[in-house]
Image: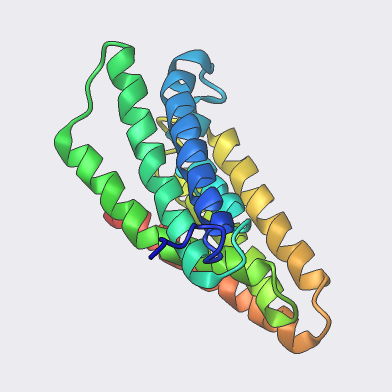
Amino acid sequence: MSIPSPRSTGLAEPLAGLALAAAAGLVVGYLTAYAQGWLGDSTNSLANSAGPWSLAAFLVARTQRRLPWALAAAVLTLVTCELGYVLATEVRGGSSAQSTVIFWLTAAVLAGPPLGLAAHWSTRRGWQRGAGWAALGGVLAGEGWYGWATVADTTDWRYWMVEVIVGATIVLVSAARSRSPRAAAVTMAVAAATALVVFGAARLA
């Protein structure tokens, strides 16, 4: 009896997507660690923000056609972002606290599925498309809001302001492109709810 190949069982494309997720996460995480030393004071917050990792997970998950694989791709991207960060930190001669690594891996497992769902929705039609993009915008706006309101005195407030603007722009464009007032309302509601959840989670972290 021959063993079915990944291609014959329809797994070739999803597995390629997961390989992309792992590679993208490692690269983004690795570059994040180095960026913390490269960037100046005005842009260093970029390398200490979860926004870029969330964006990477969202974009990678969009390459998956089926929802379960999109969820897996988002989680895997975030997990490997942390692994890439830890690896680069070790290469640079530093170390990562075990509690910090566990925290970010736990965050990856918890935040990955919602990001994967949002990414999947963004590839659909109707209210789901707007809601998917709105979730991403809400993540960016929520984190920017937290940074601006909570840690702006120890970081550069301009980064957080830009993150809020980018997130809000994504939401407004998505709402404007909605084909009905109801879809636009759903888009705005998803964005607001996501921003509140991200803000609250950041305050509790």
